[in-house]
Length: 181
Image 1 (tube, one colour):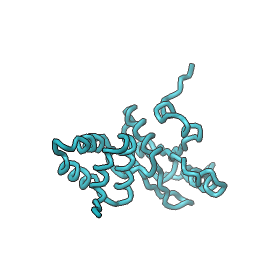
Image 2 (image 1 turned 135 degrees about the vertical axis):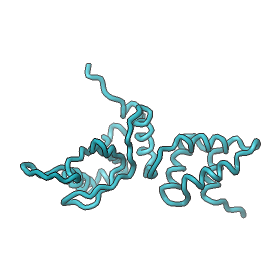
Image 3 (image 1 turned 90 degrees about the vertical axis):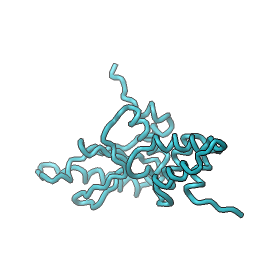
Image 4 (image 1 turned 30 degrees about the vertical axis):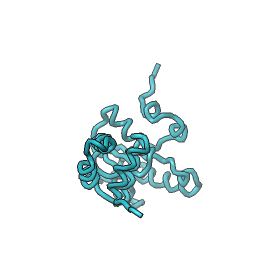
């Protein structure tokens, strides 16, 4: 029985799944530490021969990948891609921030220069009482207490969470600015 390496499997999957599914698979193998973007690129180049057109398709999909940390879900990837299509600059994925009264918080998507964070809360855990309470506690800790002043850079983040209604729509329409008319 032949067993392939994670990079080889990622390249070969391109033959059988859609480009969106392949982009998600790339995020998964990078995010779980099975391989790096560099090893994926190296494997795609090695397999890029005239008889393997899927290797060229894999390299094209890999070339569109964002820099930095891996998205942790397909929905995060969809939102990141929609923001990139709208030319939103300065995106940082899996951004860590130490919050007073909370500790280290990890946000799905952030634009640190404007202190904006977005949580793509599609996992069912976020809809439980405990998960929702934890999300609200973290969000409260991103702002200083009323009436206090604190010059710390750890305060005054603007957290947003994706609404459940977004998860049933295409990510493009969900991230699109709404008309004020």
